[in-house]
Image: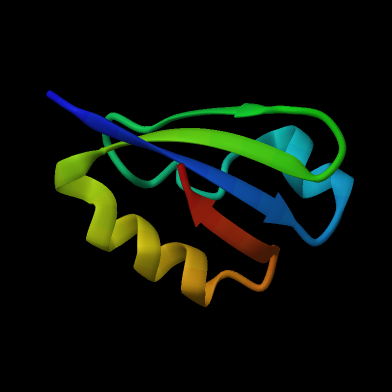
Length: 66
């Protein structure tokens, strides 16, 4: 199963430390990467759902695919 790395910038550090913005999706591995940044590995089958969650979340400032 292939996965895509997403770099997520959160609005505040406490949200980033929890690294749980995509916790509702199966197979996602996320970790706090310091400051307001979370790095998530999202299975390709979950990319559309991940994008929808990130777009809707008020805790997410920005994100980019790597």
